[in-house]
Amino acid sequence: MDEYPSHIIKIDGSIIEGGGQILRNSVALSALLKKEIVIFNIRKNRKGKGGVPSPGLRAQHLKGIELVSRMFNGELRGNCLKSQSILFKPNDYENVELQTERDGDFHFCADTETAGSICLLIQVSLIPALFVSQDLTLLLKGGTNAMNAPQVDYCIEVFKPIASKFGLEFDIEINRRGYYPQGGGLVTLKTKPVEVLKPITLVDK
Image (cartoon, rainbow, N blue to C red):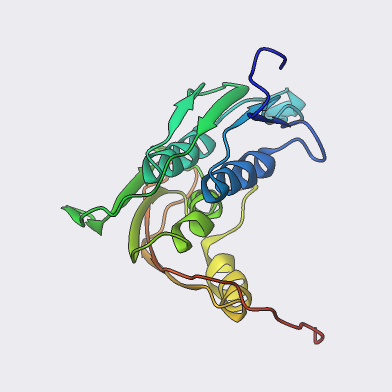
């Protein structure tokens, strides 16, 4: 990692569970804070069928970071399937016009083209989307109820009510469900800008 300038934040993707969450959190925070990052050892500890090592970007990870990069006019390197390192340099967000296609209206669209989890697309894009200067509509395609990932119903019924307590305003609309192995699910994520998070107290189970 010595080949990168000192102002670039270096993140080891193998720490803790060594999965995709480190990637998603890092890219989301990078976009918010306008900090250039490099992530290496991406998903180093992940295993596939039969316990065979399966490191690097899969479709849902790739399309998620590409979505955030487009939102923030970013520079992204290493964005290809199975890549184990990326460099991301976000820039300022600029308001965009609403677009229309057969599946609906949107400002930005991301399609895993697999049964890759839509909820993982939401995880990487939601927080950056909430802190831009306009209402946003994201059209997300893939698996709504994928294996080894949060179900879209969890995002709606569990995560959203808790997030709303912090003052976050967003809606998740299931237009079409998608399951393994075909995928084909379609979800619309709509966000409203937030300037500051509200403090909360959670004492009841």
